[in-house]
Amino acid sequence: MGKGSFIVVSAPSGTGKSSICRRLLQACPEIKFSVSYTTRVPRPGEVHGTDYFFVSRAEFQRRIKQGEFAEWTENFGNLYGTSMKTMQEFLLQGNDVLLDIEPRGAKKIKQNFPGGIFVFVLPPSREELLKRLEGRGHEAKDIIAARFAQAEDELKEISWYDYIIFNDSLDKAANQLMAIYTAQQCKRIRLRTKIKEIMRIK
Ligand code: 5GP
Image (cartoon, rainbow, N blue to C red; front, side):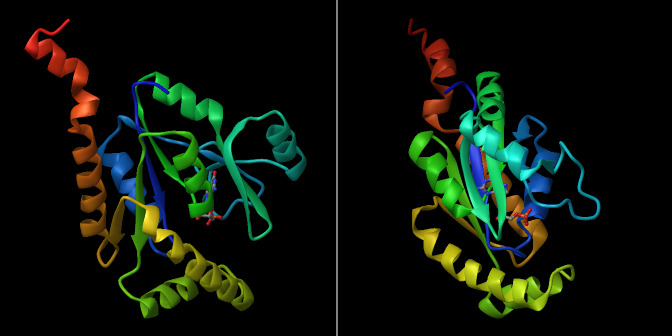
């Protein structure tokens, strides 16, 4: 697709994925975040254009019809989608792109765009997962139960991800994500132009 590459991070809800991703973006400004579109209502503190593009269902459906999404999915009655244009622009400019999306969308990206790295973040234990889901504080009990059921489904998708991070400490998990990204940057295939230059191969 272009000179950049992309890193896709998925995790069950409440696993601390957003904090880990934020750390990566702060440490590596050359990585651009793919801001998704969603029909979900913004949570306190969320900013349009930074966390998500918050749009109506009608607008989201219009964008689906126009083929604007690299992938999209429905999650708890809300639609979420990755903008094809955003991804293409960043990758063509040579930027690396970070996508924070759930496994169904991640799978579509894996099938349609070769060359990405797929990272799954897990809580340290099952008990901790439940505790974290309960601890978010802004959702009703039935929603928490549904999120837990969904987390169980998402865990089944682990098998095709490249890397797993157990988030028992934010520092450690963020460092692991950075290490994965750094390793990707050292891949021979990514450095072929530089290698040719040094070997004077035309
Ligand atoms: P939340 O509503 O908590 O922000 O996100 C719910 C889930 O939707 C998270 O797992 C998040 O990674 C995922 N998500 C966010 N944006 C997208 C997207 O564009 N596509 C897909 N498939 N999932 C997304």
